[in-house]
Each structure stands twice: as structure tokens, then as C-alpha cells.
Image 1 (tube, rainbow, N blue to C red):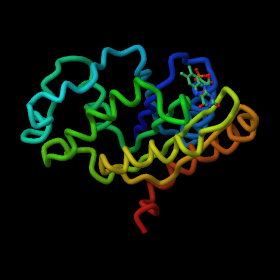
Image 2 (cartoon, rainbow, N blue to C red; image 1 turned 180 degrees about the horizontal axis):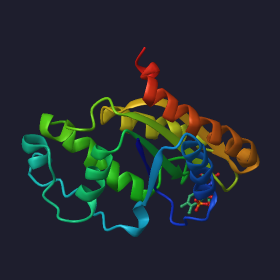
Image 3 (cartoon, helix red, strand yellow; image 1 turned 180 degrees about the vertical axis):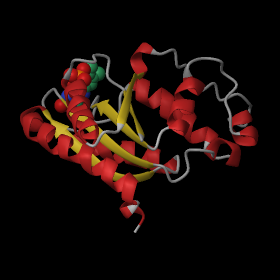
Length: 190
Ligand SMILES: Cc1cc2nc3c(=O)[nH]c(=O)nc-3n(C[C@H](O)[C@H](O)[C@H](O)COP(=O)(O)O)c2cc1C
């Protein structure tokens, strides 16, 4: 079993990184493999809104015209059994690297070719507000909206804030174990 963790943080050792690590610990307890991808290190352009209509081959072919790191990450998602999306909270919203990635992902998943290996794949979202601590719930709302729009089956959204991160790390470790169990048993489909 393979889980992919997509992080929209700039700092693998920051608070989002700590949350991701806690989740990974749980996944590894259940002997599943986990691969981490740090979007901020990747070359992911923003959508070019190719045509005058605002669409492009995303709509007609389920792929994107831009040749950057986007497709290699989509491929990793397609190969995985489950996906974690983790983002720091910026302005009560997802980070820019996560936004650039998911903006393009939601376009290709409007076409049946783009949906291959994505549709109904179980996903979990984590949003970490490491500043004042506000905005994590709003960020979860935005993240859930965009990943469910991509047709992932969202089975949990976890808001974290600076003040409760130690508690949430414990919860995230248990959640990592639970995620693997859910995928193995298929219970989340019930
Ligand atoms: C542009 C920007 C906007 C931010 N907005 C918020 C916010 O709305 N709420 C909050 O608690 N922290 C906010 N922060 C702080 C980040 O959530 C915090 O630095 C977080 O720990 C970053 O994640 P990292 O530790 O993974 O790098 C913001 C930081 C930046 C750079």
C-alpha cells in the first residue's frame, strides 16, 4: 500500500512538516509506504487559461499543455492508494504552491481522461495555522472544496493551529493508522 503526502509548505521542518511527519508515523506503524512531495520545491506554473474562453486541453483531453512538474506529481497520485494534502494556512486559505497545483488538477479532472486514477481516491486534508492560529477552519473549507471538486473522496479534514499542534500531532498519528485501515477494509465507502 502506498500513500502520497503532498505538502504546500515552504519548509519541510516547519509546523506543516511536523503535522505531516506525525501522520506519516501512523501510516508507517501500519506498514504502508509513504512518499512526501514538497510543492514549493517543484516547478509548477499557474494555469495559463489557454483559450479566450478560459479553457484549454484540460477540458477536451484531461491534460495540461504546460510542461513542468505538474504531471509527474499527478502520476504519483494516480499510483497511490490514498493522498494526504497538507498546507500551511496563509490568509485563512491554502498556500500559493498548493493553489497553483490544485487549480490545474481541478481542470484536468473535468475530463474523463483526467479522472483516471483520481476519481474516488480517498484523501485527507490538513491545514496548519502557525501564526496567530486563526483561519485553519476556513482553510479546511477551501481545501475540501477544491479536492472534493477534483473527485477525491475526502474522509477527513483536520484544522491545526499553533496552540494545539502538540495535541493534533497525536491525533494525526492515529489518523495515519486509521487512514491505512480504511483503505485496506474499504470501510470509508460505507
Ligand atoms: C503570507 C502568510 C499568511 C499567513 N496567514 C496566516 C493566517 O491566516 N493564520 C495563521 O495562523 N497564520 C498565518 N500565517 C503563518 C503561517 O501559518 C505559519 O507560519 C505556518 O507555520 C507556516 O507553515 P510552516 O511552518 O509549514 O512553514 C501566514 C504566513 C504567511 C507567510
